[in-house]
Image (tube, rainbow, N blue to C red; front, side, top):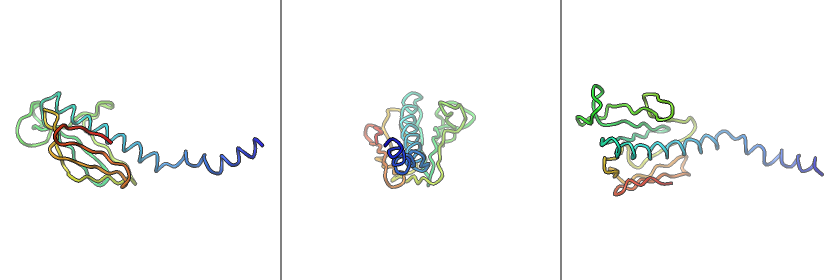
Length: 140
C-alpha cells in the first residue's frame, strides 16, 4: 500500500515542486513588489524622487540627481540606487521567460510618499501589483 501511494505521489504531485517556470514567476513577482515598495520608502527617507522603469521582463530603480552629487539636484534621473542586500550599484531585476507589463513606465515616487500615477503591473498576465497615486500604497 505504501509503495502504491508513493507511486501515485511521484507521478502527480512531485513534478509540480520542480517546475522552474512557476518558481521563477513567483520569485520575480515578490522581487518586483519589494523593489517598488523600497523605491517608495527610499523617496521618503532621502527626500529625492525615485523613478521606477519597467521593460518587457525587468525593472530598474534610479534616483533623481546627477552622478557627481549625492543630493537631489537637477531634473535628470542619474543616481544609481545600491541594492540593499547585495550592495551592487544598480538596483534592477529581470527574469527570463517572465513577462512584466506596466500601465505607466516610468513612474515616480515623491518625498511625501505619493506616486506620479496610478499604476498596475502584471506578471505573465496573471499576478498584479497596484500602486495608488494619492498615497503611494503598493499592494498585490
